[in-house]
Structures are given as C-alpha cells and as structure tokens.
Image 1 (cartoon, helix red, strand yellow):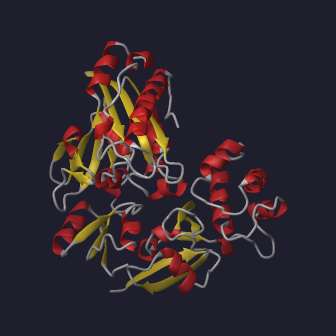
Image 2 (cartoon, chains in turn orange, red):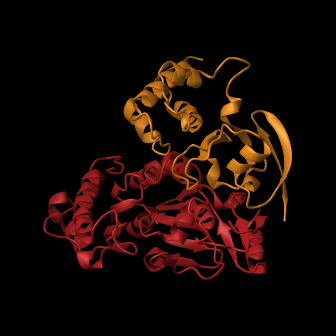
Image 3 (tube, chains in turn blue, purple):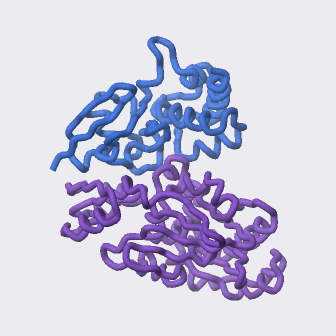
Length: 157
Length: 272
C-alpha cells in the first residue's frame, strides 16, 4: 500500500507517494534530501529531529509521513532568507550555542517556537521549554544564552 | 517497523468501520506512545486508523459544572485553554507538565487514558475530578475505567470520544517527575468537589488509585497538616530502576501535601 501526500516544505509545494510506515523524518532525509533534520535517538526523546509542523515544533521521528498530508513543514534548511541567517541561527552562532552541532537544528527550531510563544522568555522558562531537546556537549549554558538573545532579536523584527 | 495499512478517518463512524473491517487494527491518536512501541515491534497492528482529522473529537466546552474535553484534544490545547484554566486550573497545570513541549503538541487526552500507562498523569485527573469517559457506544464512570496496568474497561474497538470532568471547588496536581521522561514517579491530584474530597495517586502503583484515608481527613480539614501521619502502604507500590516502593510511598505523602498546599492558593498549578 502507498499513499499520496501533498504538503508544503520550506515554502515549496510537493506531492509524493509514500509507504504508510515511512516516518516523517525519513521522508525529509531520504526523499527530500533535507538531511539537516537529524536522527539522534529514534525514540522520541532527544529532539534532534524537531521540525516546525504547522508552526508547532514537533519530533519528526514520531509521526508518519502520511500524517503530514496537507501540512506546512519548515526544516532547518528553510530558515535562512537568501544568504541571511534567521535571527535565531545568528544568535546560536554569536553565543556559540553548540559544540558538535548534532542537536542544533532541533534546538533552533524549538527555540523559534519558544520565542513565538513567550516573546522574551526568562532563562527558567527557556530551560523548561527545552526539556525535549537534549545536548550531550554543551551543558546548555550557551544554548540558553543563544535562545534568549535569539528570542529578543526575533521580537524586534 | 512492520508494515501496516493506513486509514485516515474523517468521522467517528468512519473510524469505527475501518477498525471493524481490519484484522487487528489500532487507533492512532497522538501516537506519542504507539509510534515508539511500533518501532520497537512491541505493537504490530495490521491497520492504523488515524483519528487526527476527526474535528468533532477536538475541543473544550463548559456546560454549567461540567467540562467536556474531546478525546483528540492535545495536552497543549488543554494546558493553554482559558476555559480549562478557569474551570480547573489544576487540570490545565497537569496537562502542561506532560512529557515535553513537542509531546504536548501531539499527545491527546483520549490516547493517554486509553493507554493507561501506570506513570501517565491524566488518570489522576480522571479519578480526582470524578470524570465520565464518553465512548462511541456508552459512558463509563472514571472510577470504573482503569482496571489494571495498561488495562481499561474499554472493549475491543471501543473509541473514547470525550471526557467530562466535574468542577472542583479547589484542586491541584503535584508530581515528582522522572527527570528524563517527565512521567510521574509519583503524582497526586487532590480535588474538593461538591460531594467530598478526592485524592488520586498515579505513577506509584500498577494503576491509578484513590486514598480514602486522605480523602476523609481532608474532608474534615482541607490543609496539608490534616495529612500528617497518613500514608499509603508500600506493599502495593512499584519498585523499578527509578524508585523503590518505599521511596514512592514517601513521595505520595509529600506530593499530596504539595497538592493541597497548591489547591489552597488561588489559580495554582502543579507543584512541579
């Protein structure tokens, strides 16, 4: 059995035929070549696969591609406008909110969702809202700084 | 993952039919438990009946002293609903502590209680707020719904469509979360209703349970002090890699006290 889905990814409308058991994260990586969405744990815990699904930061490893029919998805590749990085990406760069970078795409997308929800959140709010995104390198200090700065930059735009 | 046939149901009737026509179907609500379980091959349904497009199963309404929440309403929607926050702040607070942000966007009330994970949060609210489970074929009293670990009173193919909660005079939920999963190691929902006090414990035992001794003590005197010396028997509690039964018994008393304290503070949320 295959299913035809039609959805918007990073502003581009696409139509594709998928197997029901294909996970959204595998669809993005294998079928759309959008490999910025990472697979960290594959057990819904680490958040490396986070994408914006109709503006909500969700884990693409816990959703079937078939369920994305009609949805609008934004991955890390869809954030920069031309050569200009998204304010949240700039903040992660400026505050060195990463070390190996594996968790970063998911962190950035969750951070954008946090900023849209909370405006200019305090550090406690940022830490609480980042619970679903794990980083094994940084100890989170610079990630929290980056999210805080990125959220403030976004609220100015 | 084993292959399966996918159905996108557009109505309750449509979902019932797809389920009935399949060999070994499962309903797909938020999928926050089912999808990981299928990846591990612990679940291998022949067919998945996706409920996400059934609009009638989502939403929050109040009629007098009854709050009705559609089974497909997400934890995020419950946590951020101004209706729920006003009707039962403890319930909105509970929903806001489930899993993490991404889980709350997808996970649903109906999916949570149908799964009846011993560490899930919502079963505590169902017992404490004297809820009624509405299905596609009948209504089930919350007190009769949770029958054992991962077991409920639901029949094969029976679909929860909504849950009705009683309005608490006051009430709050306090939990000690597992720091990794945010599941409750012990969670206690305390609610004063028109006809008495209810104390429901989740996370600590194979299934959610009430504590009559705490309920009668709080009915006489709704204060944390009233709970002094009243505990639960560790014989009935779980021991696992996260916590021993004795530790859970201790946590139940502490969380019950915190929940009462929070309930006494207007507009309080959970004690996490």
